[in-house]
Amino acid sequence: MFNGDIETDSMILYNILEPKDYYIGTERRTSQFSDFKCKKGGGSVLYGYTWKGYLKKDKDGNNVYRKKSDKYEGLYETKFKVENPELEDIFKEFMDLHYPHFNWIQVQINKDYMSPPHFDSANTGESVIIGLGDYEGGNLFIDRKSYLEQVNIKNYLYKFNGSAFKHWVGPIKSGSRISVVFFNSKILKGKLN
Image (cartoon, rainbow, N blue to C red; front, side, top):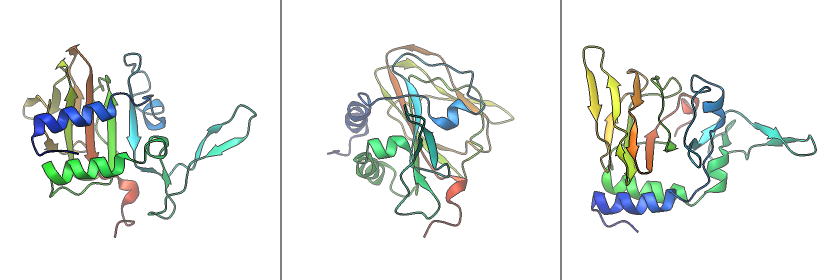
């Protein structure tokens, strides 16, 4: 599917991700992000695993539970992973081609979502992020404590430790922006082979 050219492959990945249904995932609704809003049709979803087995109540008041993970005992697949199982192979192919020596299990996908300053408190180690789309602005800001780093991640894979450094997204001036963050979560500690 991908050809090895980061610009072309970023466009292909954007075209795969853009039409998906986005929403604000559970973690974002109940955390430091709870007051933050995004453009209509945008959202922030986790593709991977969670410890939260309970999802919601259905229209009749019955509990709805997440799908149990076949890989990790005691964990469940996120709603976005269940709805889009094909993305696992797509993400793997993309990263194997463009950042092969980075091991990851989880993927955070943000569409037209400008995250406020935060630490990735559930992450462990470094993350790799890329920005996709026809947008202008939306740079990644990282407070390195002694200086403020600004990174244009459009079609550019960038590795940093979001659990150690506060970071956020600058204003998106125009267009549609999807950021994809590949990372490992503390919930998987001790569960990885």
